[in-house]
Image (cartoon, rainbow, N blue to C red; front, side, top):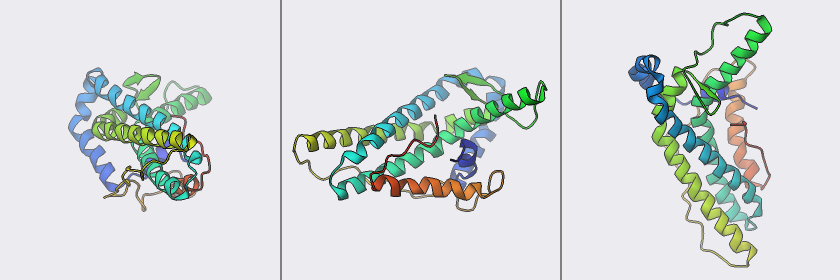
Length: 225
């Protein structure tokens, strides 16, 4: 399965530019006083964690929808939200992933510091964040909030639909909107991370979610965050 670093490397140009601009604007301030950004980062993390919980509940209920057309539409909504979660979360969790890799490298080498990894500036809920992750949490604040709201709505409607099905009631056709993508979430041309075609695997893995959930196949959340 792709790592958070892999997914981040596949960000579309739009996401990359948003991150770059925020780093240019706030990078120095974050390094000087990372604690001043803790409330904003915490809010983004809270919304992403809530969105993930909604997605897990949606995923568990999808196979319970008996009508094929209804399940297929719900699966499309889920797949789009699922991809958005991973794209947004990657900007934060990639730092934590790299920090853990650094710790493991230190243990193997016996060195006090290993070059090429992030400098931890905040630790929130056990998650290590460097300047890049903090900047992304600020840049993606409204996106994370919107994702939490949309996953909550999808979770609520799907729960009602499943309960109605159990009781023999018929609800009106789902009102959940298809998730528009005016710009791609993942780049089709980003370089591989570490070679071996990793970049392509990330895109294929995320896109493949739709086929699985549409068929009512249970699948684990890609990553443990």
